[in-house]
Image (cartoon, rainbow, N blue to C red; front, side, top):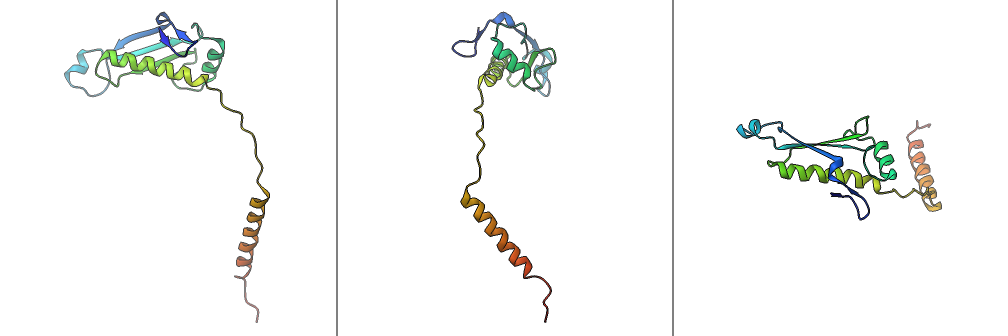
Amino acid sequence: MLVISNTVQLPDAEIELSAIRAQGAGGQNVNKVSSAVHLRFDIRASSLPDFYKERLLALSDQRISGDGVVVIKAQQYRTQEQNREDALERLAELIRSVAKVQKKRKPTRPTLGSKTRRLEGKSKRGAIKAGRGKVDY
């Protein structure tokens, strides 16, 4: 059971974990031991609330395929258990990230003081440039 929040939990049956061989350098061990973990999670077929499903499917994340399947590959650690925990934590973090609702931005306007300072600066700069003109004797 993967706990996302107090009210949202995912049963282990909905998360498909498979052990694969890790990529990259690692000596003889990397060729023999399947220590990396490949996690697959189908968003549409899951028991997540509709709010989470809609937000996850709308997310433009490279880990989410066009079919709505989250694919996470964990191979950072040397042991399969640590990589398994890492993959599950990354999935939980992805789901938690869509639960946060951003506050709507309230548009603000520049203050009167900032407007006057800006205009004074512009006129001062214009006077400096006007003084660079050709001198008429």
